[in-house]
Length: 145
Image (cartoon, rainbow, N blue to C red; front, side, top):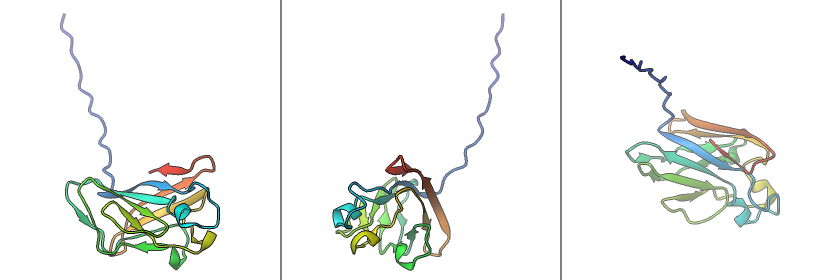
């Protein structure tokens, strides 16, 4: 008795962007509080380079869903290594190869990410939308994108 097995091809998945938002931690521990730097740095966005080549992020921007000009962070000279992730923290600190800082301070108005609903946008140096990630939850502190 012969048994035949039919090969069924799986549908191709659309490839995500080469550089993408992978996580937003929007409800930092202790917030809302007086906007202490440690609390501001408790909210962050993680951005990953999914390629096998380094990507220069100079003049790329991250912003939230508001139209406020002070809610835009622009990368300076920064190279995101192949397969690497950078964490963009809201507060102040010393930039490294894995963490950069928005540089915000000034109390409760310094927070970027709303605690229940917001959207992050990543744009390249020419302003083209590269990726976005939205969340809408009062039960979670972060969103895996």
